[in-house]
Length: 502
Image 1 (cartoon, helix red, strand yellow):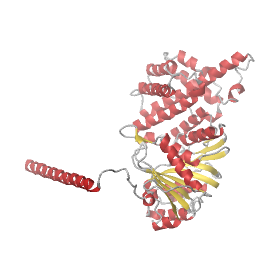
Image 2: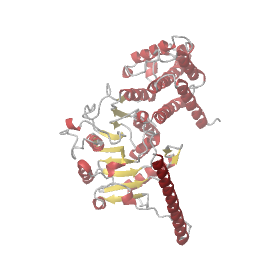
Image 3: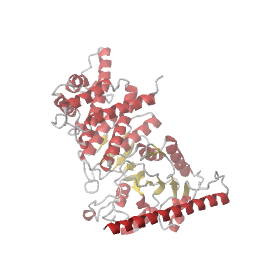
Image 4: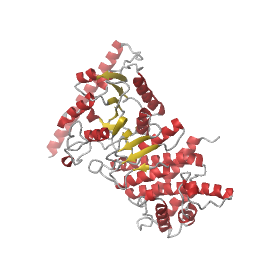
């Protein structure tokens, strides 16, 4: 049997190769739209073709019946938009116009995608020979005939490409991409269930919803049995989220347009069972001056120079009576005392809403290297009056020189630790996890940094004798001092020479 993992890697590589063909021919902001649009078009055409052949073989004459496709959550693809028409015109001057018309035809057939799909393929800035070469890669090297696995491959590849764009575009790419392992950690700990309402107030490309759907399907055998609500301020990212939801067959209410969550809350009456979010780190300005008396600031008005506690309170406001929140924040929110943030944090803690805090390793994100923390905020905690602290900074592995990732085993360990805490069976592990009550947190001045609660790891595996280790470390320290003195002398000498030259 062929190795499915290797096959998936090859599939992803071919898609990335297609993106690389475009590199240098169009601006970076455009090639992402081009390649994502073609991923979408190729996939829905493949799914349609398979269903079309099934209907033809049944001989009932329903192969052109739109309902015969939509009832199985398959896009009905008009003839003008089918891949065979596009591939046959790959090396004609009209290829860009043909793809644009295909996108328009799909939008006309699907109201949820109105004005969402990219229609920039006829642009004179996009070399049509290059575009034809990309279409050839999709036609000849990307196999989507195995529809039992192609949706999974397609979704993972979509995420893979987003990750690659984020890595290559820096902050602008990272605006909409939360690493998959971070999202999986949130979902595995929150454990969304059937018929729940899931909300992300800054949903990016929709990764939180994708992982929630996977979790629910894996644990219930059902697909799509949950309601999705989201909001995104960036127009291009909002469109990508709509495409991603369409690929996955997730019926998501992301609003009719992009909108700023603070100024224009698109779901003002929503009370969600699960809220998952990765809000922009230390975001400002966020229009605080226009929102000082907003109903969402139950625990205090957040400062104008940082939206961290505005995001937290916005989510708490939208939480159902037994709801749970999992969000990503920069570490500063754990301990800040400035501009009233410490007082807001104190009130949230005293309301017994903080269920758990996890310090994450550095270098998980493509756009920033700063350390982050996962916050878990819950109404109706299983362990009232207690909070779980986990220090996971040593977990994960480097996937390249710049980026770290958590393994499935790492994620499982974090989820199991959280579950043990909720069940009342947690054993504190020095340097890793500890449960604390309100008095413990008060002693720490309401600071939530996990290291203050879990302590320092006991290193029983260190076989080096204390005296020998101390001698070795002292020698190394003296050597460092000596080297620093040598460097200091060299710098002074160089500066002296420069002063004579001047």
